[in-house]
Amino acid sequence: MNGRKKEVFSIGHSNMSYRSFASLLRKWSIEQVVDVRSIPFSRHVPHFNYEAIQRKLRQSGFDYEYLGNQLGSHNLRMRNSCESLSDYRRQIACDAFSDGMAQLLERADVHRIAIMCVESDPYRCHRHTILAGELAKLGVTIQHILKNGQVRNAFDAPMEKDVVDERWIQRSLFEVVDAEPLSTGLSTNEALPRVA
Image (cartoon, rainbow, N blue to C red):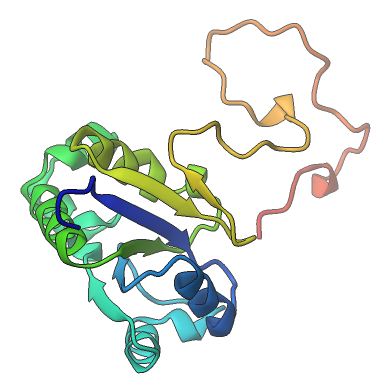
């Protein structure tokens, strides 16, 4: 990356097949995947479990590095070095986070890297809410690789949603809202959204 501004990509594996995931990495000439998942395991997509993804990536010619202990959003090291993870500022102030960022920047000097987590929508993931902002402060350009194969600069407008559902916007406890009550007329829990 000599003389050029550092660039880091991000990708969320979600429920992709390994073939689709590797295809996106190749499309954007990624050389190394830096895994920033706090818990690098999944019952639903076992090909992204730590040992499996490490082996598959290396067999496919990609380097793999795990930095979830330093840069994951919910990890034991940060809980031990921080009083609370209730806000991102405390997380960023932790020694473990600073160490992880230094390692990430070292890798970006040598390789074209993509930080990987689970969430496919980067704007709902700590890849964006924590890491992109901190990398930008250090002069690094962040590009989110989207599931559809496109790349979006982290600080362009977030992906547009079809319709904003006002019911799901978090409001202050004391805010007065002129709105209809959230009732479907049903008296059972069937009116509530189901959590997958």
